[in-house]
Length: 110
Image (cartoon, rainbow, N blue to C red; front, side, top):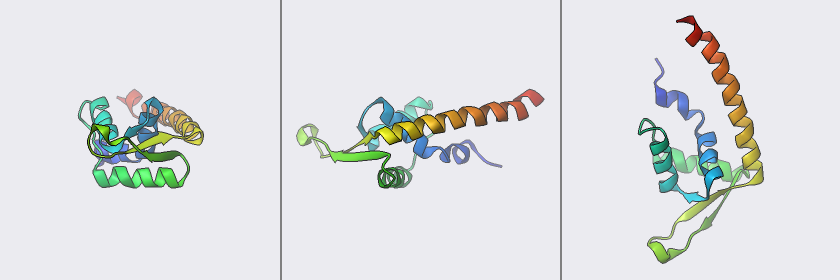
């Protein structure tokens, strides 16, 4: 039986892109926002998060830059590109279609 984390993990890149649509951010803050947005029911492992960053950057969906050191440790910030915004929109629309179909197949059968 699949658990919640297994199902949602397939949408990791889209979830990260969604966070970056709000504003540029760094790894720890993005993961914290994801955890808070899910009411603490989902959190990415650090390795998964940074693997996604690398994949998204290599695909041209995000860019990264080093932030200012004035507030402590130097952080790598991530920013979504125009293509990343388009892919996020496309993936969000796909999710709505998938959810609608699943709702028809499962929820309406109860």
